[in-house]
Image (cartoon, rainbow, N blue to C red; front, side, top):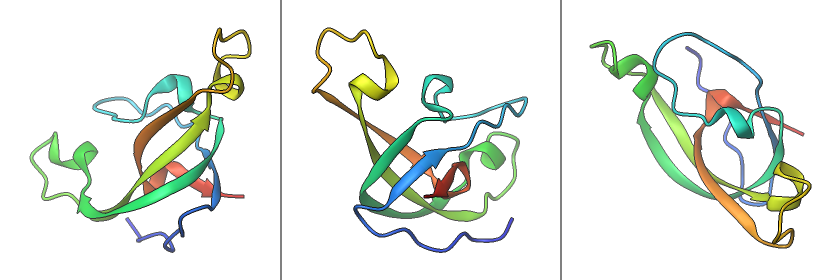
Length: 94
């Protein structure tokens, strides 16, 4: 798996809408939604590979911030935010 170009804090990203079988750490409710990189957490072994006994490609892990209103339009607290830690291969820069 090629290493994606690094994303800086503040970059707008969309979570890919992939639906691969097996062990996946990216929440389905965030797929297709747009957020901003809050911080870069560093490179870590891909848990989707490690779950099956592989070494796991080292990929950047990002903390991405989403507006609640963008995820759930009927949220009771639309100005709140949700942060999720998402690996680079799940993110597409906008």
